Amino acid sequence: LKVSGYQVAAAHLNHQLRGRESAADEQFVRRLCRQWETPLVVEREDVAARARRHGLSIEEAARIARYRFLAGIARRQKLRKVLAAHHQRDQAETVLLKIFYGCSRHQLQGMAIKRSLPSPSWNRNGKAMAPVGSSLQLIRPLLEAPPAEIALYARQHRLAFREDSSNRDLMRPRNWIRHRLLPLIERGLNRNIVKTLARLGNADDV
Image (cartoon, rainbow, N blue to C red):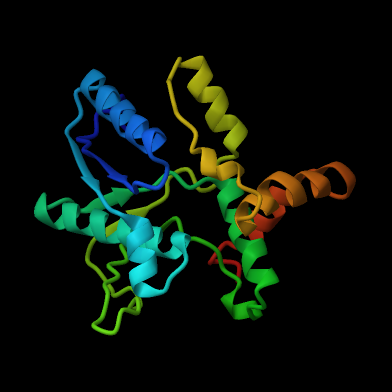
């Protein structure tokens, strides 16, 4: 986006879940945005405390915190679009999770490339309210891109990046699907399973 001439601002929410590693992520983003001369907004949220207070999983509390953060920044800065970096394998994992948790055919759709930006909040009894409609757009421009292509682009253009170590925690269902189940299917059954699942989750095809 920056190279293509778009006016870009960056946002980073420090979830404070991994101690020094979270702090290092934040510093990496700060250096990167200085290098690219990109405005940056950084905030911190004690996601673990939020999860305990509202009786939610860490993942759900983090999701709500992120969307509240992004919606707030977009409104304050009068931005029209918020972009997220979900890719094709994220979509495939989302579809499998829905299947495993027993969704119906009509609930099978995965993430949309374009939708209204969710703006979740917390009600008085501590439960998360459902996301409400928004005039702001959430766009996932990489949703149909295989992660291998993204990694290749980063190497070719010498783009530095960091990887969240919690993505290797196999106790989390999404990580088990990513590191155990999908590679097994790719090796023994269908090497194109990620593309197949991503297509299955396309909102236009459900």
